[in-house]
Amino acid sequence: MTKEEALEENLKKLRVYIVSRFTINLQLLINTFPHTKDRFETILISDHSLMVAIDEIIRDFRFMKLRRPESTVLSAGKMAGIIVFRLSRWPIIGTSDIQLHSGEVFGKFTFLAATLTGLNFINKNFSQIDEMCRTELLYTLMRRHVNQETLGLVFDYIHKT
Picture (tube, rainbow, N blue to C red):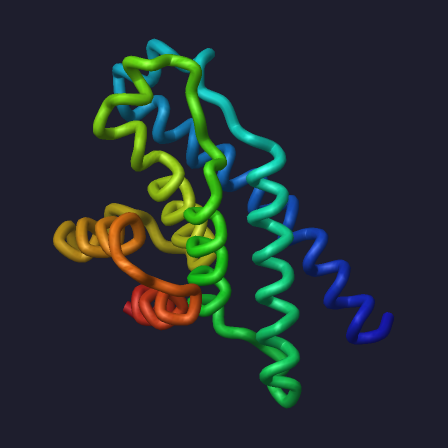
C-alpha cells in the first residue's frame, strides 16, 4: 500500500470515527440536561451539515500534510483543533421545538458536541479540564474569532497536560 492509499484509508476511518463520536456526544448532552432528555425526538442532526464539516476537516488535514511534507505525523492536538473548529462552524444540531430552541443550553450543543469530539480524539475528558478553562474555551469558540490552528495549539496543550 502506498503512502497515499494509506492516508486515504485512514481518512475514511476518521470520517466514521467523527460521525460516531459526535453522535455519541450529542446523546450524552441530551441525557445530561433534563429539559432536552424529555424532548429527544425533536432534536435533529443535519446529515448535510455534518458531512460538509467532515469534508472540510479532511481538506484541512490534507492541506496540513502538504505544508509539512517531511513530517509523517500531525500532532493529535492540531488534528483535534481542526475537528472542533470545523464541527463548531456548521449548524449540525437543530430542533423543531421552539421552547427548546430558545433555551440557553441548547444553543451551545453544537459547540459542546464539537469540543467533546475533539477531546475524545486526544483521549481527554471534559471534566479533566479546569472549569475556568472550559468556560473560556467554549466562550471563545462561540463568541470570539478563533481558527483551527489556534485551537490546535490549545488542544496540543490540553493533550500534554
